Length: 471
Image 1 (tube, rainbow, N blue to C red):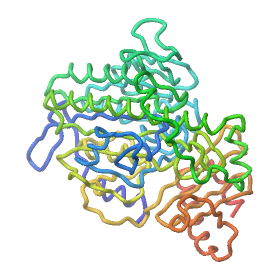
Image 2: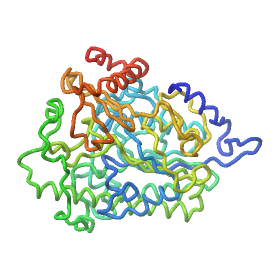
Image 3: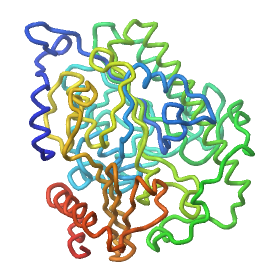
């Protein structure tokens, strides 16, 4: 089954919308449209959460979404850096289609975001936090004519990982705020105020886009004393030397940073996650107090992960290795998703808009490149022929692009430098330390995976046509 066929098949379950409140249909009966709350963090790896095996800090509120809903074990961002990842997530289109190909490149103005999809179908929509899809403005607080569907956008800014937010000028600061003005707390409280203000029969969508746990790795008291740096582990691949040249030139381990510096950064990173979890708990309790918890689709995810010292001391993201691309995705909606559901198939950020539309019972005005994954969440589809995730980096520098894919067994990556392509056996080598690209025993595997990549490029991402020159 091809991807477009899968979209047609599952799209039949998507309902039609004609009015503003009680529009979704189930047979001859009308039902209340669900509310939507999306918590979207910045640069958060799966290993920070208990639901994905994390043990350093407790994350009971985020983990409860997995216990009471679904956890996606193989959710990938299509691009491992902020702007293009967010572009895929909000538009349901690959970067070549939506225009947001690298950081600070704006989303095309004719794109229909899922916020606009909700607004058009009668939802009150609001966005709190970092957007990063409106060019290079910094902070760039948004106006309704630029917010792309999010009507309440007073606390929506374009970019910047500010540590203090105020109601009045100056609105942002790099200084560490207190519990009222530290950014995670501040925008979470604004999200709560928005939820409380909504009429019970009026559907709403709130996106909380938290700029932590991205750098700078600092958090407010008392969280800053929560995690002992001495307990932080060093990645097994920290001292790896044989990474591709095109990766070494993009991000590198600074030899001036000591192991103590690294452990301190990791401790603060975990502590930021704990602060995030506590605020997710406040939002969950607000939904419960309002009596709308079970009629709200709640999503927790991030835009990409963080290497935190992997593969020769890499910091940041966007270098093909898995931990920047495989990211957390948890969703709770008891009307359609059974508690404790685990989805093992590969799902990516570009699939989110179609899936959300199906769960909401609305029809997008514009088609998406992604697939509707609701059948997976409802445990109606056990397997997919096209069970893989496409990842890429366009790069500001034309010599720093790559495209690759992940499936259950392998990962493959082609660099447009024409050198240092990569192939890993993910079952035998999950840490991606042994590059098998030139191993003759894997020629057949490489040929099959490359064929999939070429087909994808021809269909969705023509800016990677250079791939054909390197196969």
